Image (cartoon, rainbow, N blue to C red):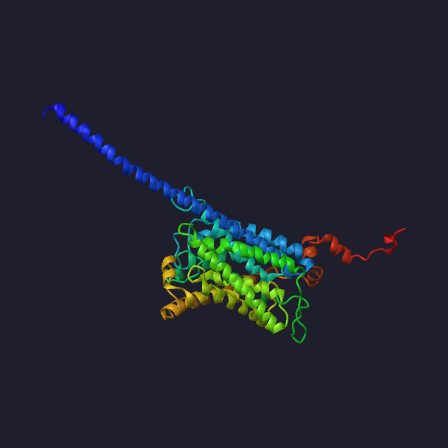
Length: 463
């Protein structure tokens, strides 16, 4: 064969090979495009979820404002805004790195401080979106904690504790369970934060309630409690419903993906549990008190949302209903028990977030199915499916260690603050109200001024 023949064959082979590669190259490009599109859709969902979680702060503002007295309404709303902003900055500075830093250990993460990744993989969830989602969770835990401060803590107390809680308490527990820490390696199931977010905040609220002491007029000299009614049950009800809606971002958003629609299953479990908790709280308050108490209904719904947060991805729908129903009962009796113990908790943070957080975390050790545990990739099936106490035991010592850490460190922080700067406003300032004493103006200026100034009847006469 001549030189021309050999060259012709080589050219022909090259052309055929090139055309043969086209389908492979096209398929690779298509797969890359599909991966990028999938990551983009996931990113949109997680970003929407982060916004929903931040929207829950509006729910807390309305719930806490409605559950407290009119003279403290502006203070409650305003301190929520600045503490969310302050805790977000602290989270950016140090907390994210203490949770997810790669150079850490089983106790705490290390690295990624002043968080600002230089690039992101277009085929994976954006780190900026993941950061926003996690930051929103941290602010919720702090707002839960502040339920135990209501109507008596100084504004400076909120400021200092926001920094220290976000830097020293929350990130350690979050690392243990979500950041690759020691509890995560043991298989502790806490899908969206019954322990990480709610129990942590509730234990800080408990520490504050103990150190701040009850509000003026809450207890008589013989120890019997007086009912201090909140000024607006409509606000409180609307706050609960905003929280309920935001919880779909809280729980369903924690799937971090939309792929097979699993986030819808999580959302369904969340919704059914909340409905069951509201119903059980209504029924038990009706039986015990003779009336269907509005506050109990609201806290039953809230407590059931807290409870299902740990197990929403691990249990079947019927179990979600059971978990929510029991949570409503536990919150009701928990609130009555804490009142007998002279723990003045105006927003019911300890019962709705603490008791329900414990129950919700333990419930996964009872009701988690092996199939769902395998799907999520955390732990194993619960007692009722496997006959084994192993997952329940992991859940139990997870609650004890995380709750214990949150309480002890929060108590220590607040005790030092109490000795150094004081935690509580003066008796006169508390009686006047925090709106006026801490901010110099009323949340309801026309109403409060009209109530505090005796009208001059001569000036009001109509000729």
